[in-house]
Amino acid sequence: MNEINEKTQKMIEEREERRKGLTGPLVGDYVKYPDGQYKRFTHDWDDGIQVASYFGNGGSFYLQSNGVASYSGGLNSAILYSKLKLTEEMKQGSFWVFKDDLHMAHNAIDFMLDCKVWLYNEN
Image (tube, rainbow, N blue to C red; front, side, top):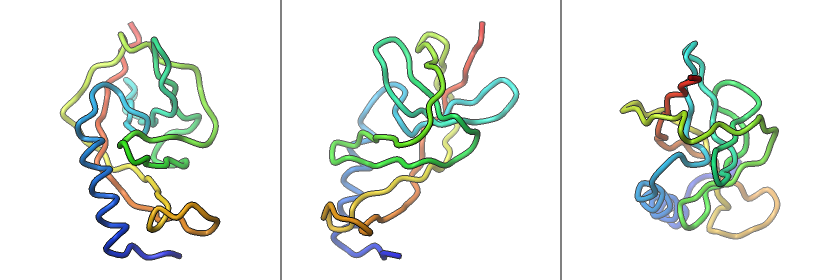
């Protein structure tokens, strides 16, 4: 397993700061369902955002240099933005980057970031 070095740590911190400046539901954020279970957002559409096909923290979320995440894995239907409300809750989510930003096999660095939690209102 790769270890985070100073260069990669700085890169992660810069991407995290860019992510903090973004608004609205983001890929990698969480949606909390009325029954108390959580899923993560996986793809952003014009009128809604898709969620993972599983509950909890998992999947593969690559944190890009602009702070936006991309997801690899199974998807459910999208939730309309009008049915989401931002909460004050934060929840840790897993992300990854390429060590030293070198895009090659077996060069992933996994880490956790605080993610926003959105409440889903079915009505």
